[in-house]
Image 1 (cartoon, helix red, strand yellow):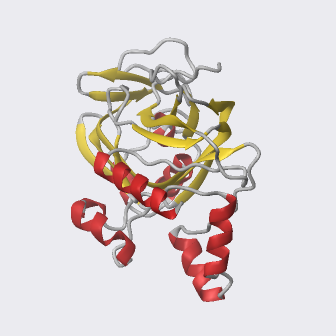
Image 2: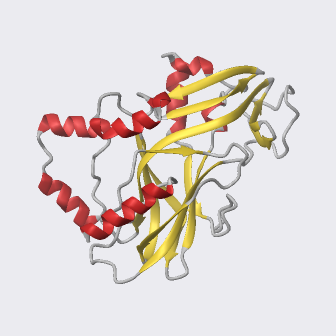
Length: 290
């Protein structure tokens, strides 16, 4: 089993795309099916049913999003953000079975530090977690999300046949000192001590937005995904318009969020609530079960 996981991990790394893990019900798989996992930016509207032209008022707390040749356009009130590049660091992406008892492995940075200090974890704990939820662990990995709203790089991974009810992943702040992040830091020097990087314009002025948000997320699927011999696709969408929309109308300046304060805290909290996962057989960013 260990050698099989190792070979699979190497294949995923060589593919240079996303990452995926699978939870079983603890009985051990007898067969496997293929799952494709990808990341996209959400392009659904919020509030008004039709988008307004940039620079025109759209109403209190309402944001509109659309794809343009320049990138992902977000407008609210007289404010306009165009995102021309979107990058997120993720790791430990896992499909969770509805029947599984998948023990939280507590391996993000904060949890590892606290566990080490308290002495509450051991190799035995890690072994138990793997028995409850065997997984292919790859990462951290840099996801370049197409700003056009198109389907991005998608990895195909064999997982045990079964019914899966949610997707787990960690948005991962790359440590400047952790040896586990060394290879990633060397390959991606712009990501030291951050997890998210956006480039674009705010009211026509260029900005670079970075965030050090570090969060474990579990995203229930709108309907369980049944993996069999035919395989299936799952898409994770990120609704970036909700990162920057002010409740009273208009948009927060992404550049202002690089400095500690209310705007930064508000956007970081918004980030944690804007990831969604769903079955996406046609890889078109549309929930097949709605």
